[in-house]
Image 1 (tube, rainbow, N blue to C red):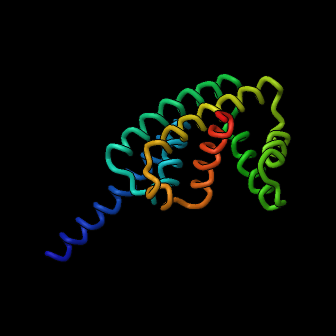
Image 2 (image 1 turned 90 degrees about the vertical axis):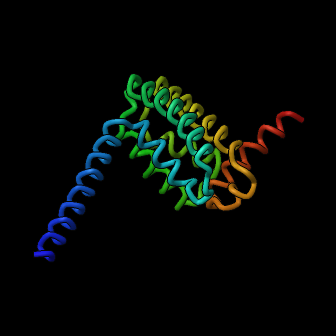
Image 3 (image 1 turned 90 degrees about the horizontal axis):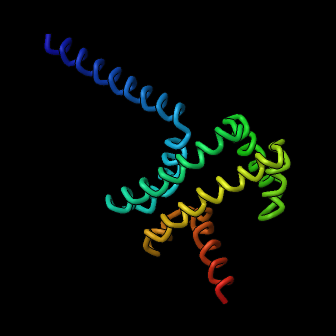
Length: 166
């Protein structure tokens, strides 16, 4: 009898956890801003942010992601277009393209109108600005724990600002 009760409890915990996970996945798909925030926080989790840093990062990025998502939807930039962007980025990296050359190749592959392209660039700038603000919350030790790509993004932007100030 005890084995039956334990089995039922284990089964109910497993099905409850998967149902919760499914509900979270469904919520993320409905709200692109949530997906942006979740993905970015996952990228920087190796930095081991404090609870305060995590809360500030979520707040900053959520605000920017909601603004960007709203503008994208209003401008007709769909999830399919953003999927094309991801594929184009992979292809450009495999082709050895970097920097501006990569950016131009990706933008060309999206098939956006001039208005949409301007909007796309504007929303990317909004998200980049928020990510840079989050980068300012991190200590040098935390940044050093991040993958090279994330480190380079923080360093490149900081270097660009310093270069302009000179």
